[in-house]
Length: 99
Image 1 (spheres, rainbow, N blue to C red):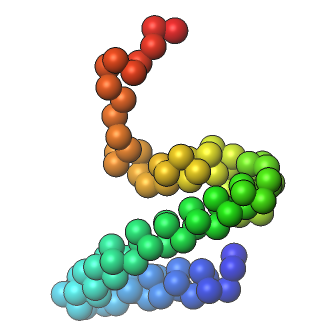
Image 2 (cartoon, rainbow, N blue to C red):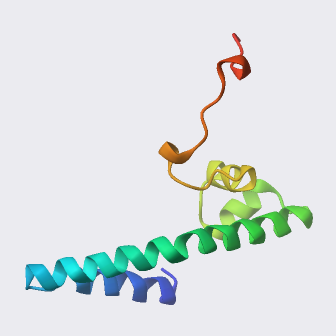
């Protein structure tokens, strides 16, 4: 795991280890608020990097290998669908083909 990511994971584990439940809940609230505020920027930044790689003619498979994600994840990032499945736009009935 990348060192900076490991520090974030360790910090999240430390929050879960807080013994006082009220203090732990407060820390979780702060963590979730910080995540909500920074997550869109991180997704956008990752997408910009992937799009730049595509402009440089790097294949989807090579990008997936470089980022250690699946091919489908890279395709979704390029399409702008890098969030949770529930947040993706639904297809109109007219767009759905029979076959």
